[in-house]
View 1 (cartoon, rainbow over the protein chains, first blue to last red):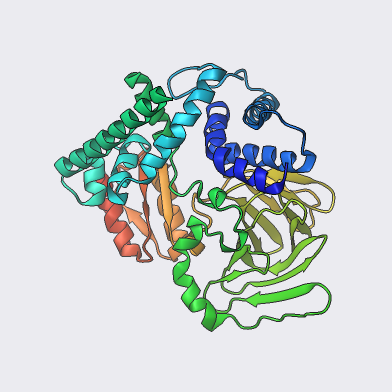
View 2: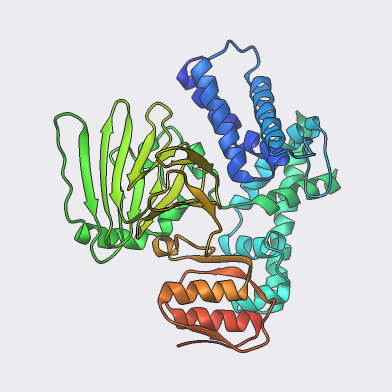
Length: 164
Length: 259
């Protein structure tokens, strides 16, 4: 493969591979490292590939499992926040999650901040209201609207996938 | 299906970081890579021009650049596209050859290194060598000791005998006279606040927060009694200790004052 071809693969798959790795290792920085190492070894060894996507997913998975084993983790299966999921499921989800991630990127910044304080950092509406000097109602409304627009977005993603 | 979608959304939100992928999607244009952390430091760039005392460029042999910060922090872009923020009183010398990138330094500096597998980035500080496998880290010399903090990526930190690989959130120190670095607990959650102007806390015990702020501002943050076990989540981007004290007071419904 030429470096331009590898560059195209990088652009196309980097984010979703990171999200896939995230289901295994649970840490974004480590996930990014793993995916970058995979691309580095792809550049170095330049194997002949019939299906680069399958190759990349396999090599990311192997590195994730190596990392979990090296930490003597009991668990080597991927998971989301609630439970274990299958490897196929993690692959499938990573392709959708990358679009959800971009949808969060494109939320209005203030609204996104309130949403993350609540969903990611686990702050109560009342705490966010006090922290930001807003009324609790405003906080609730803004978060509700953020979730609504993400849900609408996800419906579009779903219908897009069904069309394929 | 919708339930699954909500779980995926929950997963994304749990791990979401703004600009987490910025550098990667623009990976080809290395020279103009910008990182969120530097954005906060933008205020320092204006000062940078004024305080950048000298930059020597030798055109024969390996190129050498030298930077020094006098009374305030400065940010500089290295010839390879990496960036560095220098703490006041810090000197950094960068040289560049086919085999690799080398920095000699005295003081405290925060580095953001562009990835180049073929040319490792090494930092010499006193008796230690820091070799970079990944991206953002800080090197701090304090008395004879050298401290290294990693914020992103991986860093190999070596004394004269052996080294350790550091990952984000880890701090390690090479004591004066020692040949192997040892891991230390991060004394405070925001070791690079001096460069970013940001204090960020996630469920941090209130006493740790106040100790860090007291240390940083050189003023004493005092709290009304009965706050044992309280924690703080949130971030401040102000340089004004009184404003921070007010924000914490309001958030936790307690009284924090600054002496």
